[in-house]
Length: 200
Image (cartoon, rainbow, N blue to C red):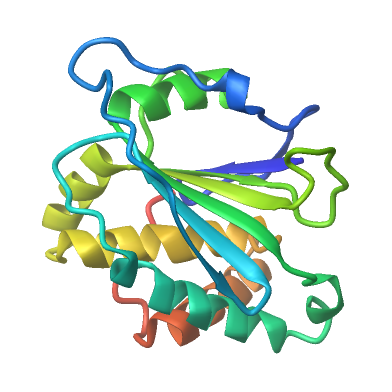
């Protein structure tokens, strides 16, 4: 499995996360687990879960860009044969929870904006056999970054989500050549030219 953080570095991690791996936060976030929402798009199911208040979850904020992303990725000749469908989970969480995940997977005790866990091309066991990847976005950090970049919160969340989807399917931007490929795809999906600078 590979995992990516922020605008991310790919790292190898020995085992996929399971449902039992999540730490549910005590305090203000306790009991705020939102019901996942799902829809099948070109063989892929996007499940959306919200574990933090302060944002009214709408499927329409994510499903159009998800459909566009899958459509664009399926046109990539070297990638298309491996795109057999499956489940992608998007989870909106707090800085506190993403800090725990960041510490667990990267030994970095700090919040970040987005963490992607990629299982693309891996064989997982039931009940997570269809899982292609997981994207965790900190709503707290997204809100701060939206203000910094003079974008709406929805625009920032869509950007981080698309960025996470591309990481799930193996794209990265550590090297110049990789960066151009990934950013070109990102622009094609979002329909804009580098509207927001990547923060490494």
